[in-house]
Image 1: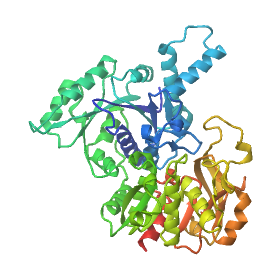
Image 2 (image 1 turned 90 degrees about the vertical axis):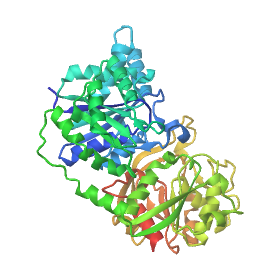
Image 3 (image 1 turned 30 degrees about the horizontal axis):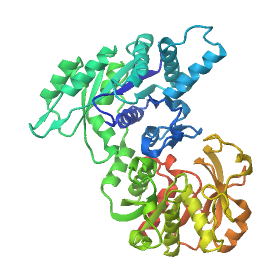
Image 4 (image 1 turned 60 degrees about the vertical axis):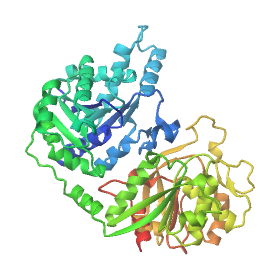
Length: 533
C-alpha cells in the first residue's frame, strides 16, 4: 500500500476556472495541518515546455531552481506553499511522447507496437508516481490542464483512472472543478453544465469524489443537494468556490467549506490536527488594510496580458502587504513611449519597474523610461532585460558611447555593452545559450542590495542569454554605475546600482520567482519601501 496519497484535480465546463488556485489552496490547508505536500501540473500541449511559447499564448514562463521552464501555475504552487518545485512538477504531452519515442528507439519495448495505451499512459503514471516515491511526500496533488472532454486530455484522464485501481481507493481521490453560471435574465444559478461535465468524466471511467463549484452567487443548500444527487457525490463533498477580491483569500474560503477535512476523511486520515493559518491571515489582514498608497509604473511589451508578468505582479502584492501599502500598478506599453511623451506617461509615478523580455520590439521605450527615472531620482527596479536597458541607457547618456547597444538587438553596435559570452557563441538552438535556474551571487556590503538581503551570498534564478560585457566595467564604475553583485564562479555581473540615486537597482536574474506570501522578496520589499518614503 502506498504511503503517499494522490489527489487529481480536473476541470469542466470552461477553462481558466482556477484549478491551480484550488490545488494550491488545498495544498496550503494540508500543509498547515503538518503534512508534506507538493503539486504537479500535467499540460496537454505538445510543446516540450513553455520556454519557446509566446507570452501572449501562454502567459509567463516560470523557472524553477533546477532550471526547468514551466507553466505559470507552478508559481502559484510555490507562492502558496513556500516550497520550491522542480522539473518533475510540470509534465507536458511533448515530454511524455519524447520519452516514449526515445525508449522505442533504444529498443526498450523489445519490438512491440508502441501505443497510447499502455505505453503513453504508463509513462504518465511513472511521472506522477515519481514525485511521491522520490521525495516521500504525504500528498501529491496533480492538476490536469485543459477541460474534461478535450481530445488531448484523454490519455491523462485514462492514466489517473488506472491509478485508482493500482493504488487503492484510500490512496487516491478525484476533485472536479466546474462552473455554475448565473443567468441574469431568469435570475437563476444553473447546474446543468456541471451535470454534463460530470457525465463526461463518468464516461471516461472516473467518478469524482469532491465537486468544487465556481460561482458568482452563494449556492443554496437545495442547489448543493441537487448537484450531489445528480452527480453521485456526498452532500458535504459539494464545495462552493465563490469569486473573491484576491486569490489569497481562497485557502480561507476552502477551510470554511471544509475541503481539507472532507479530503482527509475520504482518505481515512487523522483530522485532529488543526491547521495553523495565522501567518497567512496576518498577510491577508495587511493586504486588505493598507495604511498608505503609491502608484508605480511597469514598463513592458506584453502589458495587454497581465499573466505575462504574473510573478512580478504577485511579488509587488507581497511587498506591498509587508509595507502595509496599496500599490497601484500603471502598465505602460514600451512601444507607446518615447522622448516626446515620456514625461506625460511617467509623471507622478513614485517608482518604475522595467520588466524582462526578449527581442528588440519596444526596447527604445524601455531605455527612454530608464533615463527618465535616473534623471528624476525616481526609485527604479530593472529586471533581466530591465537591467540591460539601464546599462545601455547609461552608456549612451552618461558615458557618451554613441549607439551603444546589446548585440541581441544590434550585432554591429560599436559599443556592445551587453553581449553573448564567448562560450555561448555558435550555439544555434533556442534555449542552448540560455542561463537557466539558480546561480550564486556575492553582494558588496554597504549597498542598497545588501541592505535588502542582509547577507553576502545569495542564489537567484535566471532566464536569459546576454550578459553585461565586463570589458566596460571600469568605465561604469568611474561614472557612478557600480556592479554590486558578482557571480563568484564566472565573474559575471548580476547586480548594478547607482549609489548617488535614491534607489536604482538592476538585476540580471528574476527575483520575482522566489517571492512568496510567507517570504516576500527583499528587493521588492525595499523597492516599494523606497517609493513610500
